[in-house]
Image 1 (tube, rainbow, N blue to C red):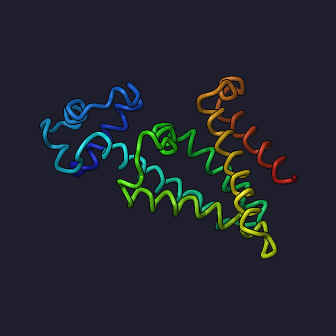
Image 2: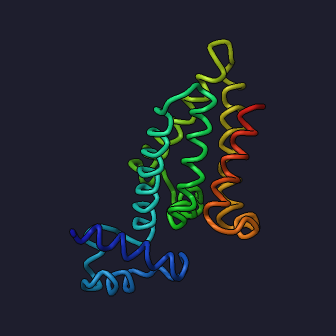
Length: 189
């Protein structure tokens, strides 16, 4: 495994255990089994490590959403599949999810490749919503529909991951049934 990947994996593990406040270049180097200067060969600072993790998260999420979007069924079924993929990503990859949507942690303008990956990911939802809205919908309506769908899945993911909803439902199987029920109900509206 190359040094860059080892540094990122050590960083992800450290954030999972100690939160972002526990991330230090020296501790990342120690966990990666390299000299304390080695991470600086790939990352200028902690912000660059966080940005790389955010980019990784967007890449994985974008791939999952694109795969779900290309699934079978009509537009409503595919929107449900994309919503499910989004929420399950949050549950499967909590470190990434908690970093990705926090602009105070990563200035995407400083990392254009990460910003582009985020736009690619968001583009999957925008494309589906445009298909749902049809040709007669204006830009304002498409933007509102996109916000509505994104708010639903992001809110559900956050409540399951960090809110009382996840604990109240019990294990993963119950959470997945709840996700299905919410998305199915929303798709009928």
